[in-house]
Length: 283
Image (cartoon, rainbow, N blue to C red; front, side):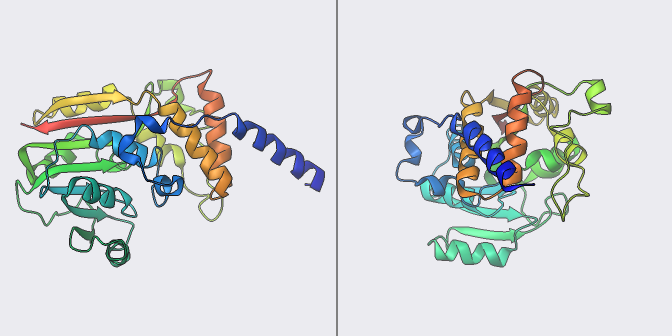
């Protein structure tokens, strides 16, 4: 590609990003004092700490409660919960080493408040029954939690009346039978090397569903009462802000390109990516 062609493509990308919207920070008073970098640093998936804040609003947390941060990633949500609610957090993740999390929590002043665990949640869990006051899971539940079998595996460790809060990327419609056979290109793309063998549609998007699908799964389990289930009214804006941030920071140019393509496609077709929060209490 010539320098002129590269410059033209970059200018086009800059123009597309320039038109993206930013969230109204006044709607998130709990994030006052957070720098923009703080909202996205070490947060995986859409929404950043905006999504964490919306999730936490649906919870009845009290100081001293024990909370499982399920699929905590790099621990920013664990710190958010400990900081704002005075809770004790068990930060569990499969991909982030516990030693790395421990160093981070210690450096941020939360060594006594957050216990890191490197664990596969689908395996044997080392927790007592009725141990947790709440389970908080942001942007990971769809990868492993979309079955009654998993809920039966997890819920014994949640107290009766305790809350399970799920916040994540979601679809505005289920894929049709035709789309499952021939998925839209914006959802069936290949990652850049060295991960080009990853089947993004099978591994990710095929496991995503609508809020209504998740509500039905929880209600039909017979073990949960759904208290809140809704798309975020500013989900599109939050996606746009994340893309703008990634573009400005040049953290993941490929993700910027594919997200812009998904936004363009979603304006004319279904399903579109969105964000939602579902909170249920254990019966």
